[in-house]
Length: 76
Ligand code: SF4
Image (cartoon, rainbow, N blue to C red; front, side, top):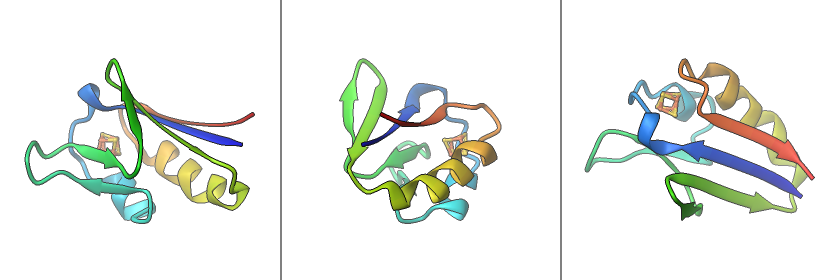
């Protein structure tokens, strides 16, 4: 299982994660912050769990590109 998290309230809206991985991230037109697509919110931490390990690489690219380091990718 792959677990991706986004600590959304700290997003500065730079768009890098979307450039690296537009399949899983998009910018909100409402508040200009990143949205982790299909994620669940738990106290500001948006989490997406997927059995598809093929998404790790593209999600890690987004995590590495994020200047405020609020995206994490874990394999469990
Ligand atoms: S790279 Fe980080 S700071 Fe930039 S939009 Fe994505 S989550 Fe927000």
